[in-house]
Image (cartoon, rainbow, N blue to C red; front, top):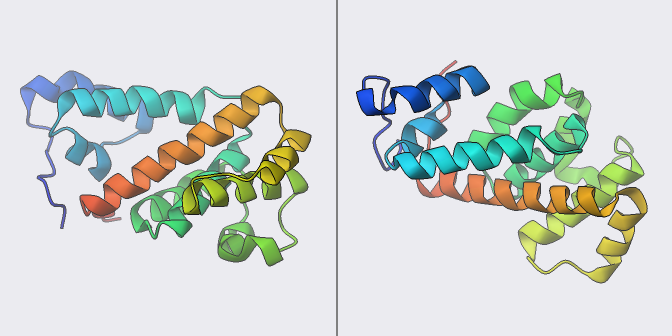
Amino acid sequence: MARVPLLDESRNDLIPFIDRVKRERGKLINLYRVLMNSPKIAAGWLDFNSVVRYQTTLDAALRELIILRVSVLNGAEYQARIHGASHALHAGVSEEQIAELGKWRDSTLFTPAQRAALAWTDAMTRDIEVPDALHDELKKHFDPQAVVEITVLAGAYNMHTRVARALRIDVEAK
């Protein structure tokens, strides 16, 4: 059970925000129900993550692989279930890739570019400090804009997973 209330749609002062979430995300998920306890945080979160997820040059499948990998590394069931079950599949990530993401280094299902981005994500998530060799490999596949976008995406989802775990946000009932 979440450590703070899951706010519902009855808060008149939050109706414009709730309408925006539904318009942009399709429905009001528990993450936003929790974040609405601080309306300015919720609005800032939505603004930032709308850019991170939908306004970059990154391929949608790569984006979802990075999100899922951070979720796996951080033991974040909330994001893993949401992204694996819907977003990743719709972005073109195969069920086999999702299943092998925990052992991607031993898998043949990932392209060299995906492998470079996953290695970068692993280092950022596990160690924070990323070795120069990983940066050199990432630069072989991505321009500076994409390197920034990959880095910020992985950082954003490290934030996502940590917030969801700390506040014990429950996965939505189907």
